[in-house]
Figure 1 (cartoon, rainbow, N blue to C red):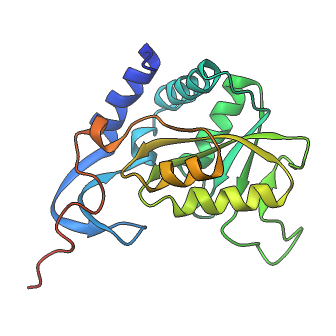
Figure 2: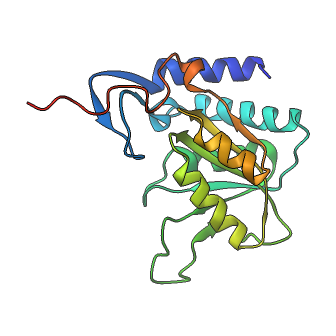
Length: 199
């Protein structure tokens, strides 16, 4: 489904978040690419963040999927694109938000899931910014399911391959990439030169 908000979001991702580099760089997934997609830069402006939240909320609602809580895996102590996006979607949709830590802090409450306390009464919209192999969003899925919460759907800003779609299809969870590598006009992950040439 393509709405005006979705089309605007794609243009923001292409114009502000996509960089073509002279040499391939290693991505978090371990793959190499000359094309770097940065959700943090793309959604750095408040208006762009709000538009992304609106586009995602529209897309999920159009599929007939309801949720009361939204969140995903945080990548660092600082708020990154997925963290900010979760909060923005919560504001736009009237839901609650949370983040999933990569590991428990080791002090305080020692929780993996911070923010709204989720459990078996919650229907979660799981989000991530840019997906390559899908490892981060699938790790978040396992942690959310570990609380007893149901994952109603998963959404990513940009998906650079096919692995996440296959994984969520197998799990029976609706999956919505707001932009694919095709939409971004870049090669699928794993189809470029494996690594930069040695000096």
